[in-house]
Amino acid sequence: MDMVAAIESENWQVNGNNLINTSVEMIPMNNSTVEPSACSAASMVDSFCPQNWDQQANSETLSNLDSVRANLGWNPNQILRSGVFLPAVPGMIHQSLPHFPADSAFIERAARFSSFSGGNFGEMMNSFTIPDPLNPYSHTFASMQGPHEIFRDNGYEMNLAEACKEASFPVEHGTEMSPLQNEKRRENFLRSQEEVKNAVDILLNESGMDEFNNRDPIEKFEGAAVESSGQGLGFKKRKRIAQNEKKEAPQPCVETEKDRVESKPKGDQDPASSSKPVGKQGKQGSQGSDIPKEEYIHVRARRGQATNSHSLAERVRREKISERMKYLQDLVPGCSKVTGKAVMLDEIINYVQSLQRQVEFLSMKLATVNPQLEFNIEAFLAKDVLQPRTRNSSDALRRAINLRSTAVSEEFKEPSSQQVPNAWEDELHNVVQMGFNSSPTIDEQDLVLFCISSNLASFID
Amino acid sequence: MTSDHISSLRNPSSIKTRFAHRFVLALKKLSMDRASSSVSMADRYKRYRKVRAAAYASMASSVGPKRAWARALLRKIRNRKMGSNLMKRLGSRTGLLKKRTVLKPRNHREMGSEQENSLRELVPGGEGMEFYRLLNETGHYIKCLRAQVKVMKNIIDLYSN
Image (tube, rainbow over all chains, first blue to last red; front, top):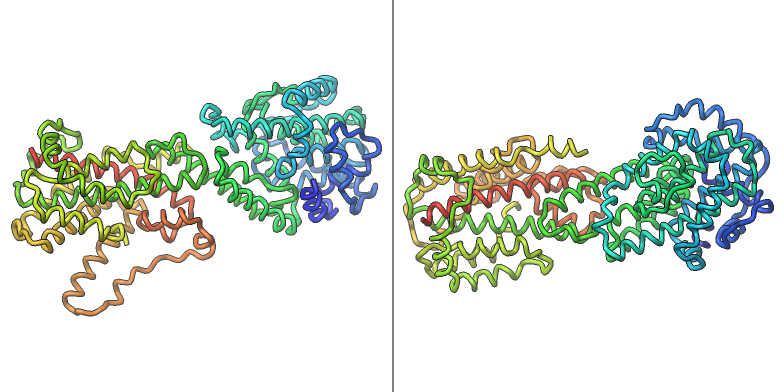
């Protein structure tokens, strides 16, 4: 709580640019009229110090909403082009406020709650069990028919769904997740559910439902709801966000989506600087854990963080990198269970080193073999050099050479890291064992040891 | 993104074929050139170095200039070869051999993680590129290394039978 409050208060300057800021500011004003359904909500609201909170700002927001909505164009890709969405949203909230004070406050709170998945959600979590948020959530949403209708009409949910989809599709493979990951997801899911529930409660209490025709606050709410319940969204376009079934969609969707929405408001460099380290620390800190696709989880921006194009570009870059890591994971054998960027990188490095060593061994072997045999190019090319041949004679040779080569292989194993997966380590051993010809000599072994010791600085350098 | 993967990756089997051809040719050339089967350690080592250089060079040339690591690899081999030749003649350190790494400022040199830096060292040409590109090159490099190992194994198998 405190951390979030501190960050938020630090970040907020009511300039109409920062949606989150305005949202938070509005909340205290309506706090009296709102019954926080969760203790956390109340505490969060109380911790805010309303900065330029006045009706004027509210009116601005509301009036901006209409104009911005026209500009927005409801392009499904808008959500993905955060920069485009950015100018729209902040203005919207500002000007919509006087007309729908409840909406703005609610939106703010919803946005805040949805974004509040980072640090202190534990407090919220403690008081809730998994089933609990589900019931009131569905109940609350079920009672809101009006907003539902509007949600349906709103293409924003599709935007968010697509954004979630893009952001977190690698995490879709829930089957790969370990129990710990599932726990984490449940936690986040629970938290987001609670947030949505709070948001919905506020919405109901503030009873701006008649005015809900304005799509923008709803859009914001949808953003919050979708983010919070993004897990439930899965990655399909849904008609009714509010009545999402509580599927355990990957929570990174929520977080990356929140990043997008929250980062849209321009402006504060302070939040970026202050909250970025938090995010990055989280990222580094998580490398030791088993959270899957940790780069997603910690890509998530703190509230008010990443309000400039740099952060957005960085987030896009991070997502690209994580996708590439996933591809590499498929490439390197035995890495399907590996999670996390650091461990994955280690595996990749080991694998590349092992392959390079194999090449060296084979070239050494060829160097010793070459002068003894004649090169018949045509014969080579005729036979399929590309296909592995039956290894009957090679096996015999290998066996004969095993005694000799074990010493070498042992030494060879030393430089290997302990994380070498078995799959390609066996292959390496095969190479080593076959690395000797039928007439192993002391010179050969010395040569191999010489190569190993020099290691050629991995030849590359 | 998936299409990028596919399009950016050469067909490994064709690379394999090209590599096999070039490597076999290089080996033949080596076997003809070198003094036949000298048993001395130094000669063996030299031969081994040549074979390895031939392996990498033929792989890099089969991949083509499109891949950064292939270009860097060829550059390294040529520098080394030039260096050794020049060293023989001049007998002194030659500044020409200093391989200039492209120093892309800030983005690529910032506090890269430890693994990232070691990966850069492993993959040829990895110093000057940013992390995302490094991962791309690593993926392709791994594929080609695997193909190379397979071909070389097959050649050795052919030899030893």
